Length: 99
Image (cartoon, rainbow, N blue to C red; front, side, top):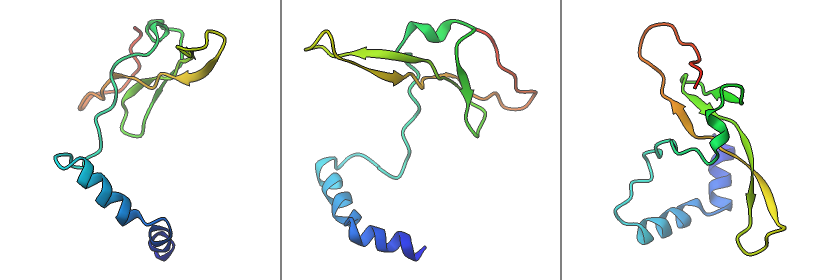
């Protein structure tokens, strides 16, 4: 725990938090954001594509796709979708459902 406190002092985390609170006064940064549910690629819907679950049992799309630059048609980079496909159902047996 002492190492984390030292790291917070070195990188001045409190100053950053104060700047963010000043810039976004109505936002509560203590609550984590909801997962993204919009697929960035149409490839996630195929049943043979990569899907993964997190520690809570939610199903996500792990499909990789090329994101092309708007200004340069020859420039692109790999991105991963990471969209939430299915939330964990409460109770019962968890299993993957094909899309």
